[in-house]
Figure 1 (cartoon, rainbow, N blue to C red):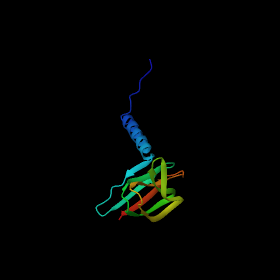
Figure 2 (cartoon, rainbow, N blue to C red):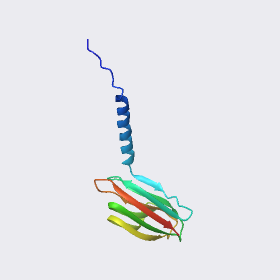
Figure 3 (cartoon, helix red, strand yellow):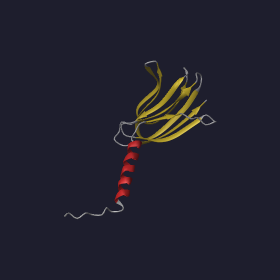
Figure 4 (cartoon, rainbow, N blue to C red):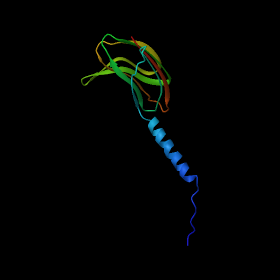
Length: 135
């Protein structure tokens, strides 16, 4: 007869904690698409972590004639663009490769859903702070 061992009372909790950590890390390692939600004053601010090989994208509808002052600062280099889709074409009002900070003003020539997008091509996560101000 083979003796049986009693399960340790903490074993179930440990397995649950490990499973929760794995699910959380998988969720954090996904690309992020965030809807622009403007304050009453026309501002939007966000801090995100861009996972390695992933992107963060802030998107929202803008009317012709509006302008958006934007600025960002990252803890490391990211590829950056502002874009919108026109049929099958993608139009880029702004682009920069491997930059950790930039600022500018988008003048809206065409009513569209515009997206500010950062892509992380590095091996580690990169923190990103973004500020937009709609006028």
